[in-house]
Image (cartoon, rainbow, N blue to C red):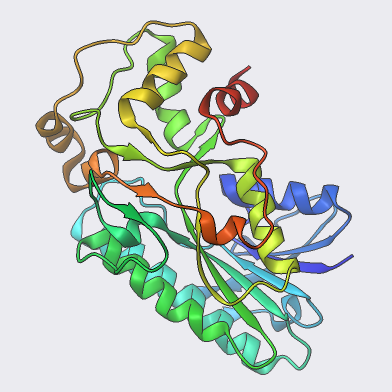
Length: 300
């Protein structure tokens, strides 16, 4: 079995990855900003990326690095917080790169989180890894994020970026927001409801990170989305169906979302139909490719 070092391990995706790694018998190390933090069966090492502090022992002798750390985009986008979204991805990646260059026996693979926000929005285009970056805020952040994690690559180390879609996880992310509304009978489509949603079950995403680390796939970006994509209206309808609740109509107008959420409404209104042929071409197999079984697994 292998030794994995994980950053951002206490988030929804990080917890799923650590749980999956332990179930497979791997040894897990995490980097935490909380001194004295304890996690059963996991080695905890301290870092403070803002102050360029990291315990190099977290990477010495590790076989693989999984890098998830970065400020959440699901908080109101003030000017200051937009800087934090971008800067947190830069300084965490920089301190890791410096540590990787110092250790004598470091990981042979680094698999880093990225996002399909790289592509911008379109109701008609299907995005692949060859699609260019858009020019909006999320795309600029994601492009910058990948620019730094690409530097992890060396003659002896692969660097993979997983461009993650909407992650379905019980009590977190989109489901954490929509399920309480659906249970109350007031869930409704957002904006036009026609915008494409490219999603992935959190357990498939955890398995994909491990697959990318432990298989000799080429360095570079891979879309981390299941198939097929579905409309925002279809996603909301599926959630309501699984919970046996009605879907509330009409849809919430885009201008209302913008009044309530400000610029962060972009997350709800953007349309992204994203393909996954590149990652499936490496031999990865999804456990969840249809939305209703995925939701039933998480919500029942």
